[in-house]
Amino acid sequence: MPLDDIRVEHVDAVMTAAVNGGAPKVAPRIRLRVEQIINAATALGRRNAELPNPASVKLIKAVRPTKDDDQRENFRRIKLDVAPAAFRKVMSLAANSTPLSALVFMIATAARPSEALGAKWDEIDLDKRLWTVPAARMKGGKEHVVPLSPVALAALDRQAGVRCGDAVFPGLGGSPMSYGAFAAAARGLDFDLGTPHSWRSIFRDAAEDKCGYLPHTAEAALAHSLGKVEAAYRRETAVEARRGLMDAYARWLMGEGANVLAFKGRA
Image (cartoon, rainbow, N blue to C red; front, top):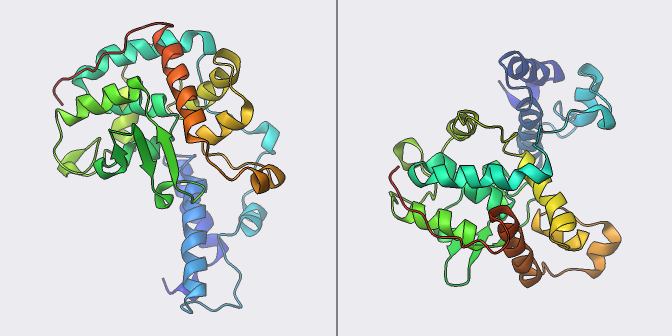
């Protein structure tokens, strides 16, 4: 369609198709992507600047009433105290599975699923034990540096043994693995893990309640934006403080004092 012809009802129809197709959480992502594209087109002079953006939250809410924030369903997660045992089960199975290796890496780095699945080898510095996620792949649009714990390095060691391109966790054709294949592997386990994204919530609780780290360190590890006042004064990303947190989190996941060994296997 010509950009000037796109209206709210068209965006609403695509979002409705996602919901009816069994992917309700994809609908808001579609809205955001369309909004970004139309904003860019307007800025480049390819769309009439006098027209409102049909994918704006304000207009979409007018035709798609949503629940209040406090009524929205959270990502389903397992209880904090059973998370380490569940994680160790996943790790024991990951030696022969790229999707489960991706799950181990995602959990160990407290990353969003899309960030972990999109990881590339040139983002990884094994000598410094750092993973630098470029701004283009971050939800907040800012580069994020993740200290790598022994558990995360174990997943990378396994993937290095089956490396077949730039993607750390390749799917068909060597491109990054699809979320569908990744989620299917998690659902196929005979024990409950909750949703992949829920492990960021587990990390947040464990960081403060089990590992004793301050809230702002945990929030920085999750790449969450700080409040305006705090952000104005705290401009460093505290990589070394977060390194201690990621290592402590790994020890909690594996059991205090556990030896974390690299695992290798076949794809």
